[in-house]
Amino acid sequence: MECIELNNKIKVTDVHDLDLAQTLDCGQSFRWKPQADGSFHGVAYGKSVSVKLDKTDMYIENATADDFKNIWYSYFDFALDYRKIREEISTIHPVLNEAAKYAPGIRILRQEPFETLCTFIISQNNNIKRIKGIVERLCENFGTRLADGEYAFPTAETLATLSPDDLAPLRAGFRNRYIIDAAQKVANGDVNLNSCFTLDYEDARTELMKITGVGKKVADCTLLFGMHRIEAFPIDVWMKRAMEKLFPNMSGDSFGQYAGIAQQYIFHYSRMHPELFEK
Image (cartoon, rainbow, N blue to C red; front, top):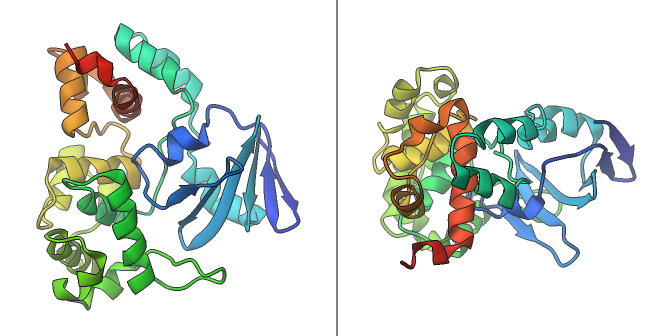
């Protein structure tokens, strides 16, 4: 893999096992928007960029080689060999083998932890379109405005100074109280997000569940998508149905150290094949 600087963008060569739609629009991140030319525009780590794939070349507009080294290489999890992981986990169960083949371009994004925590608090009893709208309003109202008119995700310190009523423009309902509680506990150190990268898994989950409104599912999503704890196996309505129907008598532990990657293959496959659950 090589990063080449061009005019206001970079070209990354030898990119494999990445499908932008499968990765950026599958429910693990809520700040990416598909464009007519097949690219995706989004904001992450305070950077507003457009990303496009041309076979094995990836172009990132409004980015430098330093940005790739410091942000995007990690963000797209390029250090991990997903092909090798798929081969390993596909032996666990025939349906998982099928699911991995169906969407081999899914990668687990390494997102900013506080943003991930907040977006999955917002995701509770919600659909992806509405989640994206609430997240966008949160950024527009309380995030730093970037040079191109987009907005960075607000910091915990900024949100901690607000009350749930201040979040009324988001139209997020009961979630406003949870967002403010999360911001205050992160900002004042009652919840240590950095510790969740290295704590024992159950302890990391418990740390996040100190926040009002954060149960196992939101904690697991935060650990998987915000701390890259790929042993996490979030269970939502789709996954509960998928496990009962397709993987009876199995649990997240059945999928080993790459359970979180297996979960994404199963989640996407199940959502795209509702006919599996009709009988």
